[in-house]
Image (cartoon, rainbow, N blue to C red; front, side, top):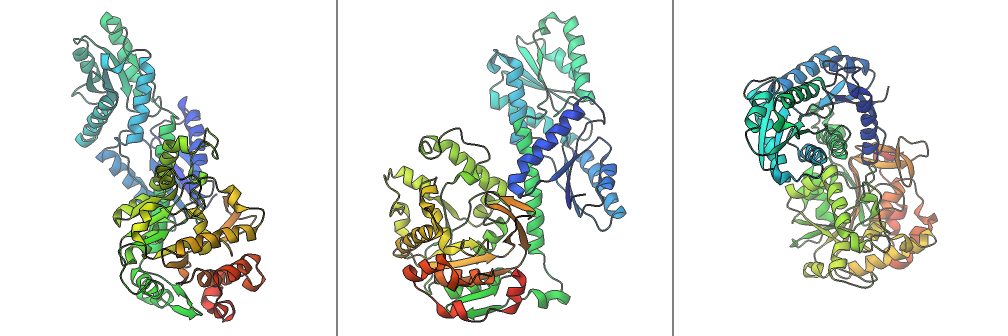
Length: 562
């Protein structure tokens, strides 16, 4: 049994015809989640009234994430879910069970139902058609109100001429009553079931429609839309919820307040080594103290932060918790710097990334926005009023012909403000200096890697000198909530290979010198910086900190990365 299990609590009965399709869709959702989570999640289905049995069957897992999937989810359904989960927690006291809620009016649900409506209409335009949302209506008034809300959203989305709701298990209005009302209007109507799969209620609605059409010739052209089933929007809806549950769980773990008994183990500690600092950073106050030591003394108008957002692989990018901690401690509002890269795409680009990226910038921008939304990074930036500045977008807007020596004009008004290279612990050379590589505005930077590591090192040094002439540079390499340990048989995978994660190490290596910060972080990951071609280039082009390269490292930190 995998350590973490996701259970999709469907409203399907076991062994109904749609069950096989639902199982195949669960596999699609797992494949969609894998690049975001960094591992293949185990996703199982729970039949209607079978959630308790599904949890019992997964009791060997360390954690279970329950996602209710019914598109009608009112107060009674929430109470039922809460009761089942509470009882399961009592039966399995060592098992962590997480669950979320359902928003029946979620935009992705609305889009999938709207798309099914259009397919049912064929050549008929919605402006000449009425919409009837066929819902169960069983439960409380708030659930029925959600059905009216969803109908209105689809109606406004497609521009239907009229809209009605008919219930199958509630009399006001019963679906047949809605049909009798609608047939008096000079419109054709499309009936949209509020369900993902063909359930017993959907079949019942179809029978009511067929019987009504036999006695009302005016309704012969009425159509019933097929449920969305494995529609891409439904896949995205479930993927988004799983990723959010996973990230919220990680954030809770990282933010958990220690008890007094264990407070000594998590207190802030720091060690000054050469011109840099190795420190544990458990909270906002310790992060603020660390920043005081590396930022210029004068309070800046803004702080520029170059993050590491190259893809979805878990633990390899600047995650929401780490960014939240940094932004909460900065002395001024942040401007987040990053450029476009294909690693943030959810799907393959249907164009040549090297020559046609600019002409497809709307698609690329959409992929970028989806990355920030799915990972939760967009929420963090909104919470701290941070500005996101994409270097590639600026390069395209300014119509600059060459990327060499390029700095966006919009950043020049902040000349003199500090720029923090906020890098991950994910390798002995891929630290704050290498992080500046992402300031090259071209979305495809393969040519800049060059034939070997020293070529790329020189490119990164060039960027450091360019930006360093305009902004005081600071390096902050973080392993706050995760650090990468490369391992060919590791649990997680990325385009660079498999790896394992060191969770919640809580340490940083920082300095007002990028080289010093990288020397310390590299040594903590086991690198002899005196025997590194990469650091030979840094020594020749950016200077050196011999004490940072030779002084003893703190034993507690070394043990954390051993």
